[in-house]
Image 1: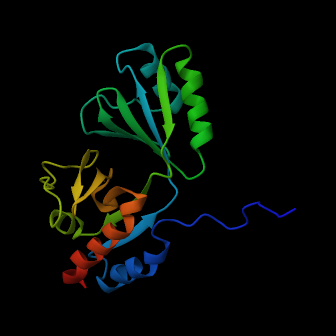
Image 2: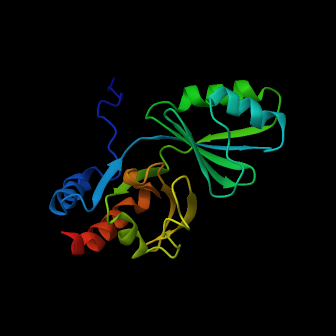
Length: 200
């Protein structure tokens, strides 16, 4: 009988672009830093923000689910992104989806809750450095000035004609996360590399 077990390791959507992203980082002298953060745990969670489950889930995760539109709450290695009045994206370290889902479902108890593992749906690109905001502004219609899109903010938007979730990290030096669907990751990487040519 043929051995059907998978023996290869998973390949990230931007594995083939890693060297080119690193080359821009080196050539820009730190003005632009580009890197993929592959395989982050991503869970889409839907529940009643005013119900008992919201407080219980927040307590179980050690963070309060953000209730203000387009905001981010971070605690430890977990980050909660507000996507809608009853929807959040929880982001955590790779490999933690099952445990995180278990904790959410246990905390919610009999309260209605939807938890969907979307980890394979998107990959995450880190865009950091002193020129990060200017680079992103080339292809994003949002006002990315720190007064308008400061640390702790997120938005579902387009970047270079690609739908993304953009996250301003907690410290300005930490830059931005760009969460992009895996099928569009190669296109977005090419766009970022092209837009970064003026910094190298």
